[in-house]
Image (cartoon, rainbow, N blue to C red; front, top):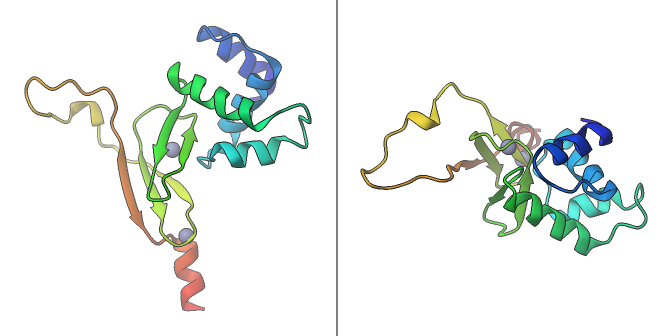
Length: 139
Ligand SMILES: [Zn+2]
Ligand SMILES: [Zn+2]
């Protein structure tokens, strides 16, 4: 998604699409690596010198409040962001800290909970050692 598409996407979701917001959303959508606000800031500051860390933090929380990104937290306690808001499984590598998307045919909307409970959000997290770290170990 390029910056002008991102801008349109934000407007379609009722968000005032400033240039910086559109750049941040476009970045997050393309990266798909579940970055933290710090990582987003460090990657974008060269491209957008006027960007501040506070803007990135506030923008991400604003996107989250408007349900166009989901927030993931793992053992590192830091907020990671994902532009894919559909329920999907995340795998967090204990060694390198990378977060991978796992795809499945499970229909998460069809999992029955307890009567009388309303489910707003569903998080399914796996933890372990990723393939790359495993290969490093056996070298
Ligand atoms: Zn790893
Ligand atoms: Zn994801």
